[in-house]
Image (cartoon, rainbow, N blue to C red; front, side, top):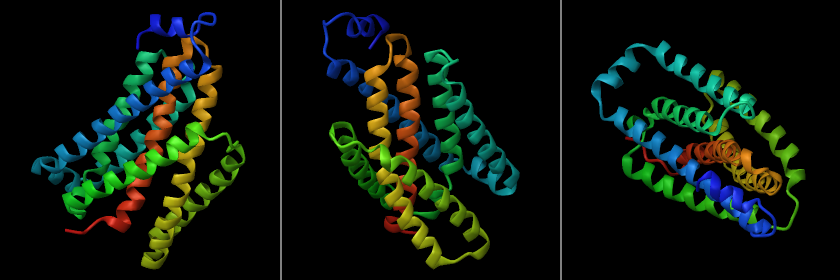
Length: 235
């Protein structure tokens, strides 16, 4: 939807609040879907190129470098979203999605393609249900935010500790907790985006759609990776 359409949404009483929010949420989901497609195509493409696989297997520093770039883009987009134009924010989000694809291609070496696709559809179903709940529920999910944030910090700490412990039992517990946390975050983030969309001026709609897409993209991707631990069949 172009800028003129958004100006119409925000002019007088021509359109309802629900229509204005719906217009922004539609852009959020479209951008998120495009980001996931970019990640999927890059990951699958790299897994099919022996030269790419050989390079990363022989140069572990390159993957570490990509992770650093990934975090740099994530914090850069989040921190500077209000200073970026809608076009630049979208391009940076797509670049972030592509870098994510590069870091995730090894899952095609670990799990069968069938189980990856199966887990993707399971994730889509769970994510869709929780996002719809967050979008339409009248319950205020604000109190979830602090709880889920603290749980996420704990999850990250446990994951770092388990890098050294190599405990399978702890790994399964972390995966289960990760699923629950990102199921909750999906609903909470959706409601937060909806609330911001209700107050957003027309000129910030594009940037809001991008940052909203980024948040939901991360929820979906992390949920997928944790579910893959349960539903993925190893090669």
